[in-house]
Length: 184
Image (cartoon, rainbow, N blue to C red; front, side):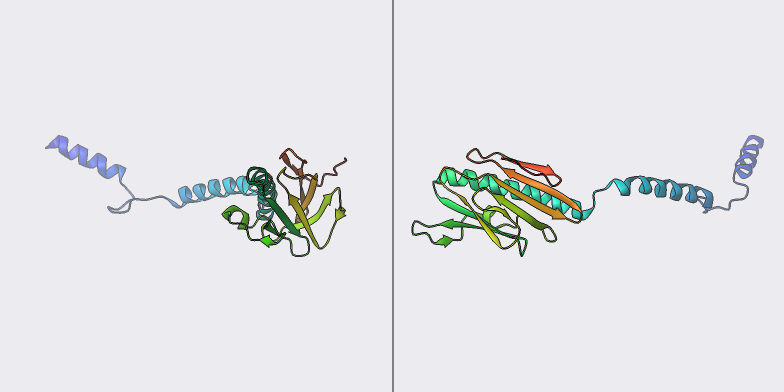
């Protein structure tokens, strides 16, 4: 019984100042955790890409994928497609030409998706046969041999630019960061 009494006294000494049922964190422990979380957030958040920069990069990649896909589809199916870039509305549209020269809506689902995201500007398009185009609509043909023209497209989002370069008759398309001038 004496041993039991000593254990009870030792337990009571450890729990001095706390009443039963009050387990938890002290205010100082909570403050330390909040400071650590705030410091981590201050380091991580500036490194996250801005939403506009992400939309610009995605638009450049989508447009490059669309050009590659159109080039491949034209070669494989031996059909003629057109990529319409509306610089006034910053939009794209893909059409398929019938044997009679009518523009038809292509059946492929990929061709009906939006290639340039909202808020991204198609700044200009350069084609050898048209030169530099900064307004209106440009129709880029993709025939049974693919694209016969070199294409340069500049996209802008905020203060950033991306350049899409499509090389003729090969299907190679590059996406470059910044406004890149292309020399023939």
